[in-house]
Length: 104
Image (tube, rainbow, N blue to C red; front, side, top):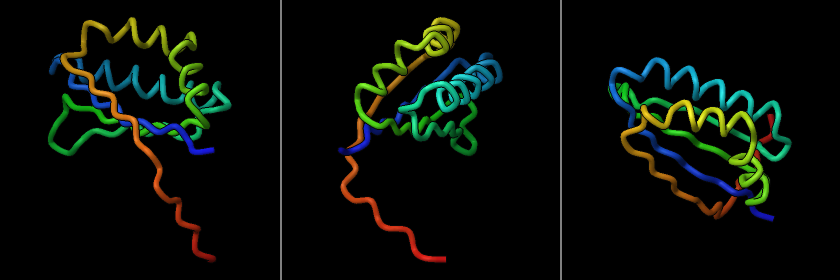
């Protein structure tokens, strides 16, 4: 079964970047700790673009992702940042190939 992968891009109001960053990092940590189907949750900030955040998330499957968006910590995060977000884009990715790791 292929993993469910998304990239989420947020653009937030300049005055809210520090608070948004804190809330997003907390949400990512809770996702990894509390959701068995969450494999990876990276929070990135493009260099020189403080108002832009890019998330790279991998879940076991779409059901695990749906559990994520219904989780108490996500719902709390989503409500807290609603007034900060100027733009949000979600892109679902398809994993074409997963190369084997080289032996050490």
